[in-house]
Image (tube, rainbow, N blue to C red; front, side, top):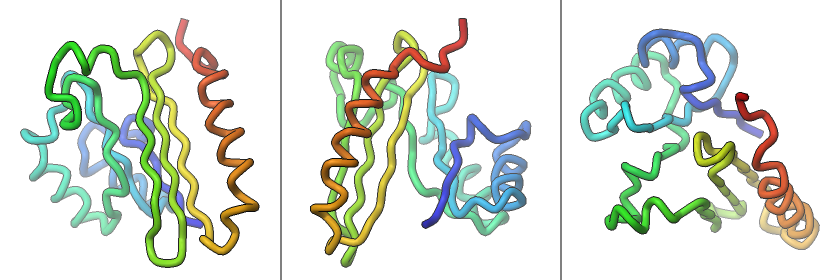
Length: 143
């Protein structure tokens, strides 16, 4: 299993420091958090440089609704509260789900990858975990 961590959870004042800390802590990838004050289009070169210099690849991008390329209409973006992506990579299945939580202030995430041959064994687990993500949408929120 490989583990990644979100930039918003890493210490450091710059992307270079955050990626270096991810490497120092033993993570295999970094999920870049994008929010109202972080536009990937403007910071792409910084992300690429931090990834290259640390040797830690970008594993995912956590987008904020104002930057969501899948929802070009502003009203549709505001109404969207979750996204799921799943599929096959070679002989493995991946499943990713992100859901807005804490009154729309943060995203809660699930990420699984497992051998396709074990699909039946994992289906119920992944489904239950997905429901739990929704049920615990207010857990861990700042007061």
